[in-house]
Image (cartoon, rainbow, N blue to C red; front, top):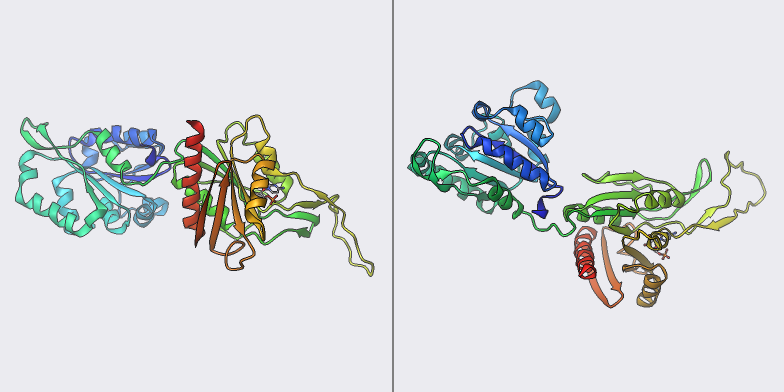
Amino acid sequence: MQQLCNRRILLGISGGIAAYKSAELVRLFKRAGADVRVIMTQGAMEFITPLTLQALSGNPVHHALLDSEAEAGMGHIELAKWADVLVIAPASANLLARLAQGMGNDLLTTVCLATEAPLCIAPAMNQAMWRDPMTQANLKRLQDAHGKNLTLVGPNAGEQACGDVGPGRMVEPEQIAQATANLFETGLLAGLHVVLTAGPTREAIDPVRYISNHSSGKMGYALAEAARDAGAKVMLISGPVNLPAPDRIELVPVNSALDMLAASMATLGKCDVFIASAAVADYRVVQAADHKIKKSDDDIHLSLTKNPDIVATVAAHTERPFTVGFAAETQNLEQYARNKLVQKNLDIIVANDVSKSHIGFNSDDNAAKVFWVDGQRQFDVMSKRQLAKQLIKLIAGQINSKNK
Ligand code: C5P
């Protein structure tokens, strides 16, 4: 169930004896690395206490729609937007009827209306209630309305709590968790710690001036998000950029190359994959002035010294992670990139031809040629987000073949 790592699962519990099994479902989701929030209907709280689910999920349980205090914390719209998936287990006959009517008369039904996340529904009820034509009609209506966005899990047939035998038993939590996991594409980097550098560095001249470059950080941020979506725990060591902090990613803001080096080295030992997408300034001022340098009629001369190569330092360490570097070139792309692959002791190098103005620095699009010791792959122009997804796939594939 690697696909569930880092996912946000909203679990709706309605009133039925199977509600006790939802406690186990929360545990399975948590064990798979998901962030879980629970919404309970009034009926659900007759069967199992919110405290149990709060303790297991690690988050307060939501149940009130018209409660100013609850809405001030995380209201129905925030919950609806927060969720990567909405799982309803157990879904009672009454809940199915209310959903089929498009009602929003409690928190769970309202969130169902408000969310665009996929729905996974595990019904549970007495066999006669399940067979009732109204329940079947409600279910059909829901399936017609939601199409592929709705996954129905179960119910199973068997002995029921009331003594009846027949269809209506909620399927076991493992099966619901697996059905939820199946909704997500990948878990290619599940369980791995990925550290990325991104953006430019700023090398101080004095307290108000610096040397830097035009890196936007967009490629690095897109890669960080793609790594997170592939199930990795992600740390993003970022120079100053104009991008919002990405969700569910540990952001470590830095300024200079030396700061970026220190932050990167501090991750060794717990870093599995290091992706150096930052445009690190090659030089820094030997001694930045403590006070603003006053303008005078004379020319001034800055003495510059070489910055350490961060990715090469990481790759030379005894606790070396799988290491990916970038190369922005204007000519001899393959030759220069392959040289850097060897010199910096990288596993993969992603090379960009920056002589083409519509891609690369500051653009939303990018193309790349990727090289590794015994292979290469070309990616034609696409959005940085799409390219990031492709690169993460390729990186995961190379890690796998290295570990074989
Ligand atoms: O040598 P060049 O700057 O072209 O190499 C680019 C690659 O090396 C990028 O992955 C970049 O993040 C990394 N790099 C670094 N530290 C430096 C210079 C480059 O990590 N001081």
